[in-house]
Length: 77
Image (cartoon, rainbow, N blue to C red; front, side):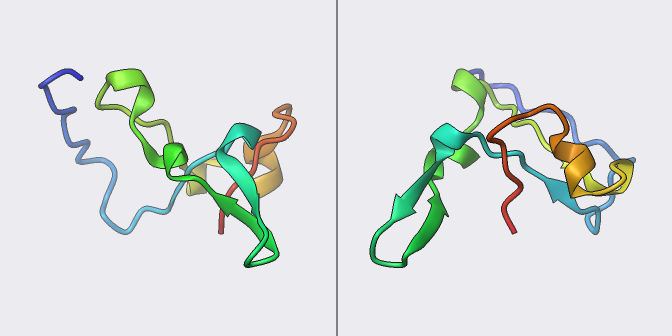
């Protein structure tokens, strides 16, 4: 992992709602809860970097817009 931290973007205020798209490899069926759950891998930084991709919710028309063309992807609640 790189030692440098990404710069804090002052244009994104703390109250900004961010969405993380979750790929099908990152959710599994939980027999005990009888529902799908997200694995912790979904919230790990990208391949040894200090970055993680997210969407700014206000920049999307709706959740369907955020998932257009991305079969199997989900937005966790």
